[in-house]
Every structure is written in structure tokens, then in C-alpha cells.
Picture 1 (cartoon, protein in one colour):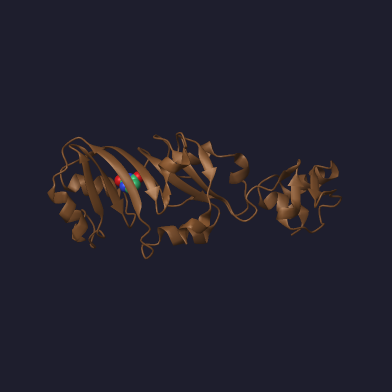
Picture 2: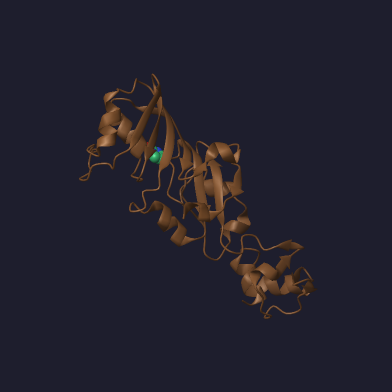
Length: 230
Ligand code: URA
């Protein structure tokens, strides 16, 4: 790839600005100061301001989504993308969340610039388990455990029942629900269907990745290894 294309592809600056950056000696390739924007290089060999190119093989990040922000690029109000470095947002392929969490849901959320990764993790065929911990304003009936596991729960307005899901009731008005699909407001709608409206909801795991192991405070993020999902 041309150096100016690398700098713009990975969100550092425009191709035009890249020529200036190179002129000013801010870019090196294999340790030698780059002289021309049109020179070709592998992104892994390039340093910008003495630092390696960030996520040269794709951006894969876990964030602890705080309450109150939305997983949208467009809506008004606080967006999850506001919590991320501008350079990531400028990457040529764009970045997106892997699925979504509601504005009033906190917890583990993945961010990537790899569309195939999004597809692999959100495809209903893959059934990647997602674990949610919840509190409700009313007790969860014991009968919900069997109903959710049966694969027969039909949510309002839908024509196919929910896939079997594992419900653990951990206290009178709280529990843990593991889903293998991702329908709109699914946890809230499933619990509302058994008379237990959700008042607090957090996603604690996606497949093998557990929020607790990442040690992230709300709004903090870290890089992850995408191969753990393969
Ligand atoms: N289910 C919900 O109800 N909300 C979420 O954010 C995720 C799953």
C-alpha cells in the first residue's frame, strides 16, 4: 500500500495531509525516515510519530458500555462512539458495534472494523451465547425457567418462538439469562412476558469473553483477540 493510503486508511489523516506528515519526517518505514507519500510499505513496518500503526490487522475491541449511551452513529445524545478515539472513527472501513445494547443496558460490547467478524458473531446460525444479569421490579416465576428453555416462548408481534434460553434465578427479583440469538430488546421482552419487568440489565459475557475478566470500568475499553471466537 502507498504510505499516504496507509495513513488515511488507518485514520491518521487525509492523503493530502499524509504528504505533509511525511515531509516533516513523522513517518518511518523499517526504521528509515520515509521520503515519499507514494512509496509502498506494509502497515506493520510503518511508525507514525514513533508509534506502530494501531490495529494494522483489524480493530477488535471490547468496551464496558455505560448506561445512557446509544450504539448508533446517528442519534442525538450520548453515543458509544463518543467514548472512542477519533482516529478509530476515521478508519477507512468504518467501525461498528457487534450487535447492540439498549441505551439503558450496560456491559460488554464489541467494536470492530471487520464486517465478517460482525456477521460471524451476530448470525443466528452461530448461536454465540450472550449472558445477561438482570434485576426486575417483581419476582421472576420459577415456571419461566422451563418456558425459556422450551423454545416455545412467542414474543408479542413475532411469528417464530425464541430459541431455547437458560434462565438462572439468583434472587427473588434478579437472575442471569443466557441467549443464543439477539432480538430487539429480547431480555426485557422475555421477562416482561412472565410478569417481571426489568429494571437493571447488564451483559456480562459474549461466548468465552467475560466482562469480569477484563477489569474494565464503565467507558473503558481494551483490545481483544478475535480468534477466541473461532
Ligand atoms: N436484551 C435487551 O432487552 N436489551 C439489550 O440491550 C440486550 C438484550
